[in-house]
Length: 203
Image (tube, rainbow, N blue to C red; front, side, top):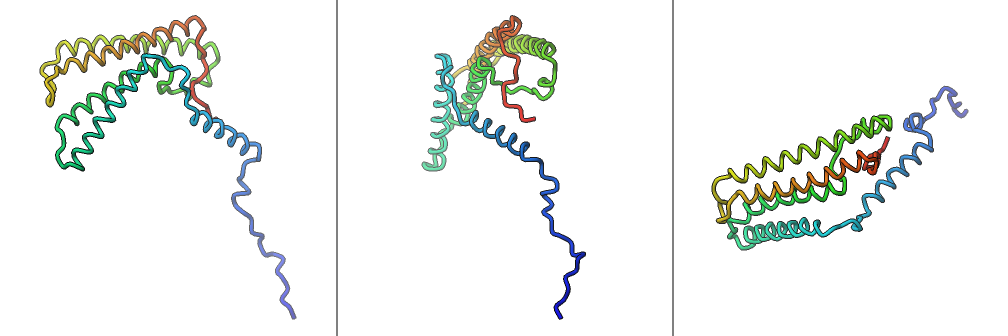
């Protein structure tokens, strides 16, 4: 006599199905990530200016120095002593000179987690205050960097070049950042700068 099936046998249920969100939420998240991927894959070169060529030049010089250091150390077993120090200085330069381009394009890192929830008027005046403080801070740092260059003693270790040149280059870059920050502040104050967040908000 065949065994009768127990009616109390539990049914196997996928635990993910009980907590799975509706299809519309899945679709919305997928669309947001697709939009984010499209923005990340697209490199906009339409707004490049002649001043940005300096950043590219410093980058490729830094690349050549680092490659030369690697080649002489690991291939020739006779590393050039000046490459490490000069590469460090060029890394400093590309950081500060590149910040001029970043300030002009408005692509500096910013915390906008709470800003997007503010009312339109409060958001506008908060950004106006932030832009003004950034301009003041960068202007003060440009002045202090210039003063440090005037007081910097001695020369570079590997090359007979005064260290003050590095401070003055940083001061010039910070002066450029100050100019673009001040222009952004004026545009924001006059309502000619968008108050929307720069990046894509996934909320």
